[in-house]
Every structure is written in structure tokens, then in C-alpha cells.
Length: 161
Ligand SMILES: [Zn+2]
Image (cartoon, rainbow, N blue to C red):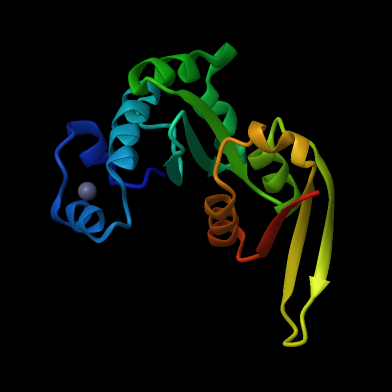
């Protein structure tokens, strides 16, 4: 599945429904561009959920099972994507929270994750990272927390120590 419909990905012309999603901000121009590129690369067989532009990098979020397809044989698709987008491309599979956090933080090493129980019954996952490694993060901390929340429903707080 792509964020836009197959016909739109194939033709590069958005239908009314996709146009509306783009206007509402449910889709970004990057989602649209990437849908077209991936549709052509995989003859409609490669899907993803959303793409995030972090400035230097583009992060593609997709179902865990689809990560290999997006990357392609020997990283073939990744190379094409990097070239077309002019940025480094990273693929992250949606899966268990712990794996997702690991993927997002790579290559930063996580010291530990603690679950904190709040009085109202909700929980927060506190992810501890060495402040020496802060510069290695690809995405700004607030953005990352929001992304993880929107993908998993879990509340995450990233802390440097
Ligand atoms: Zn459409």
C-alpha cells in the first residue's frame, strides 16, 4: 500500500481524494513524490506508510515485512531513491516499540528504556541515551517522540544523560 492510490502513483496526477489529503496535510509532497518513484521501481509491488524529511535524510516508514522490498536487492532501490531525492534514505519497519525505537535511534546506542507509570494509569517509556551521542541522531527529539507516538500509540520521552 502506498499513501496515495496506485493510479495516482502511476500517472503522477492526483485524483480528488488524494488532492484533498494533500491539502489537509495528511499527505506531504514527499509522500506523493516517493509513491511515484517506488511505484515505478517495483511495478506497484512496493508500499510504504509515510516518509519524513529530516533535512539531511529521508526516513521511509513501512510495514516490517516490506522493508526488504523498499531497500531492494543489495540496496539497489535505496541507491536510486537517494539519487532521485538527493538525500540519504533510511528505511524503518513498524513493529514492536523497542525495535522501532532502536531503528529510529540508529546508530545511536540506547543505554536503557524504563517504563514510568503515571497516576492516571498511563505509561511513558523513558529512553536513555548518552549525551555524547546526541549529535548522531538523525531526527530532532520532539519530532521523533511524536512520530513514535503516532506509529505505536506509546508515549515516549527521550532523555540524555
Ligand atoms: Zn488518488
